[in-house]
Image 1: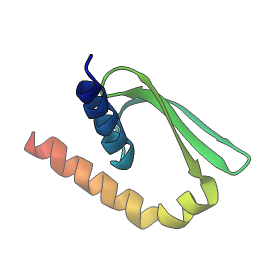
Image 2: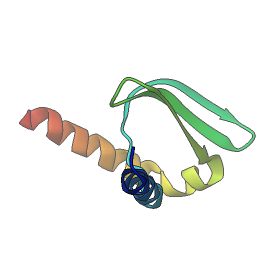
Image 3: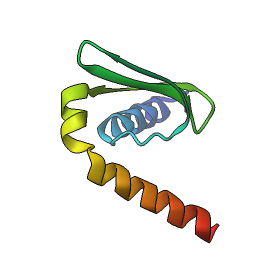
Length: 82
């Protein structure tokens, strides 16, 4: 590998580190809440293990009955239009 190719790889890695991470929790298989941390675990879009950890208090502040009802409405629309 040439010095330029190595530098190009380094530049690509640095760009990846600066970019936001977008993952899809494709299959949820574990739910856990311990010490004010809420965990959802499962498989990502590539079949790899993925764990997402939320601050449980903050999660409850954001996700309430109104948001749950909205999610249900969107799922129903998705299923009806599929």
